[in-house]
Length: 140
Image 1 (spheres, rainbow, N blue to C red):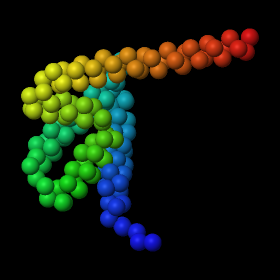
Image 2 (image 1 turned 135 degrees about the vertical axis):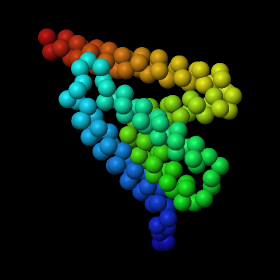
Image 3 (image 1 turned 180 degrees about the vertical axis):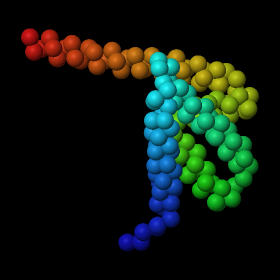
């Protein structure tokens, strides 16, 4: 049996970047916790810095096909930013749709992700509340 070690490179780069992204998100969130009231300042900061970094890195790498550049993109954009904030992917994909002049798709994606995302979270809450009520009803 012949094993290609090169096949592990992409999952390794994503995983390594994800570790740093998740730890960064955790500790930045922890720093902001002492200042947060009702408004989630830490999450806002993470989302905005993630979006800025996504735009910065993708703009720098557009049109570059060097293997090391692709490895860096995999590590940083997919791995680090993917665990640091998924909001950066949402914003980046929206901008790429606008840049490619797919305005209707950009609007549907932009509006649909935001509104349907909130509705999906609400449905998750309602589902759990329904199941809890059903469980309580079955106990009585």
